[in-house]
Image (tube, rainbow, N blue to C red):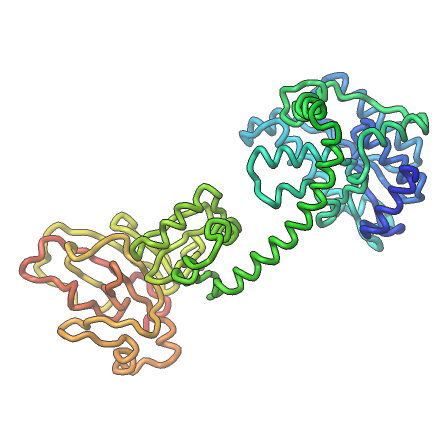
Length: 456
């Protein structure tokens, strides 16, 4: 079977795109992208061409751009060209040249796919970006991911289709593409940077794989078959992870609540914990911290750039860092002010007992020595109890709210502050007797409800 026949069969079997879809081909001018252009042309697919000039190789970059423009003339199709100041972008964003080039080109490709300019009839057709990644590129990606430690997901290599990006040549080895170019007398340009081993991918291509082939002559075929197996393993893996998540996670508003005891009994614990937390900005290195959190005291937490994981009694709570979206907010004595649903809390410390204790229920004045930070600000829940100021016996908060003649809507607006599992203050209502100021008090913590939006 010829490469063209394999190409058409692969597109059809994997349902990568339809014949009337708008195809935008990412073309560098190298042998792989030139082969992709010719295959699409011979298969009768309509396509347009997009070329990135990263201006990294001087005259060679300009030569490549000119060559790709000539390809557009050859195939009577539109060519889009974008020049990038890649070095400046990399410096401004403090990233590598390779990462900068990847971000720049895919951002631009996305803009082209969304632009009506790409085709006068494009609004009637599905749009896809096609890249010329082939089987050997996939092998290199597999090895890169394996050595970097990306887990099962990374071992499936490059996906043939991801959203609107399609790689229709992943079935083809490099030698098949080279043979196709010779059969069709196709010209292409060479990128001199491909010979440099300073890039990890080039080192794998030029040094590692040839060395492996000496010991394992069929190493490329074996790795291609492994990619197929890993893709299927990833499907099974994700199915199992979703079942565990369904059993463990309770969604409450913008938060996830996970029972600690049930999680501790789950195996393999480390893998499942990582799969849960990775969606919220936590890294694999923080997995162990989360596992340690399971056996820590209430109030401990760890953070990512977007979320916190809080240990609250028998629960792990994954809450957004944006405290206005969270029903669980941790703070310490240096917080100053905290925004939350009811308004703001102002926190101040005074190292002496005031001559007069504030009587307003919008201010909690408590004995600082009884307070253990961090404090937890949260919504009340059934089962909460405290010792109302002036009483020596505990009382369920639900009963207290009934005695206060709170309506259902008013109860929904009740928040509490907690210190080491003990309620300090029913916000805007009453403090706990255990934290009251006494003759022995030396320092006082003042917590004030400011600018209340919904004082109950």
